[in-house]
Image 1 (cartoon, each protein chain N blue to C red):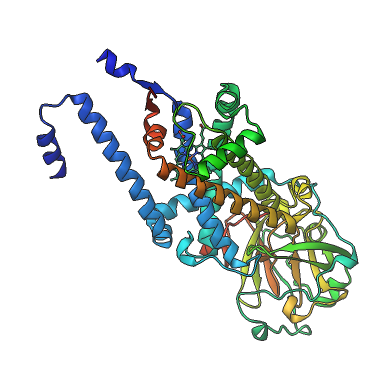
Image 2 (cartoon, rainbow over the protein chains, first blue to last red):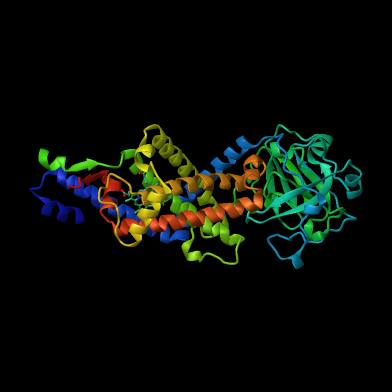
Length: 252
Length: 206
Ligand code: HEM
């Protein structure tokens, strides 16, 4: 309708002029459409094609970060004096809802592409060679805190149980129903530790008893706590936050 | 026809016009989504009203931020490369002296805008555009510093560590937004400039 009235009223004018007026109208409408779309911020994010584009870019960013990841680059370590006290608690529930795991009956289950799937008790895990690190934990929300964790080098543990380190992913299932997964290159990084102690004490429940996988090359939510079982796989396992839209790789 | 055309002069190259509007769109997305990310853990004792932000929640805002950053960086590289290689920056943003900037800003404040000839930027404009370019570069590097404080820790160290890089990123955003607001107000006050950034042409000052 609109187009027709415009053609009639412009009848007799040169096609060049009409084109130029149409172009200007298009630009004007385009600009105000863009402004409107942005005003409706969150609705825009929910739009299906927009969401598809954003998810696609997030996958692209997974690839870019995997490419950028240098297996020999170490996260900065800090002196004891730099440790943040008190260290913040953070989870998808509040501190009085923390899951309590019974250490006596506990056994770490191994699944997937692993040669020796014998479950591990806590005394067996504590008997493995232990190392410590004081590193910065960075949250996806932006805040950060420095803490000290101790445990077994994850790459040593994977070698000991005969994990297929040519597989793509390692997934984790946790006692609080949290779950996440990481890439094999990060799992084998020398600072990725399966930790049982925080600040030289057995991990308290709020920091992830009986164990937390500490990955200083990834954001905090990629560091699972209360791990009950882990599996090595080539099929993308996703994660609790990742399945809701947080970037999967989330490297630091 | 010949005579009519002779009154028009080309003042903004096509590359500058295209990159300018892609940039304006990209900056809008980065700022609006960045404000939502800020709200997840505010550095200062205030929050940005959610109505002004983009993304709906933290994950959505992060998706927008880390998608638009590619658009903005690639676009910025095209603009700056063109600006340097073609001589566009040298021709239009230089020379610039503190004296001239001071003088032109005062004139502008008195409502006497030194922008008769649209093919020449006055000193206040030159200062604003150069400041925008510097801010954008600082934003990109402080952004890399907080996105990759392990892999790109050398960049993070330049800003004095992760926490201070966050502060630099936020304050540079604030400065850029301030300059852009002034920039848009000036365009509204001298509306003749607006179509020139679309068509590239202005009527010759006579
Ligand atoms: C809706 C918002 C905007 C409008 C209406 C607008 C309009 C304009 C106009 C009309 C000019 C030409 C000025 C003249 O000829 O005197 C210009 C130049 C410029 N604008 Fe914007 N602008 C906007 C947003 C932005 C943003 C967000 C940025 C950067 C963050 C920006 C950076 C620049 C720069 C650097 C120039 C100089 C370009 C060159 O010659 O290399 N503008 N803008």
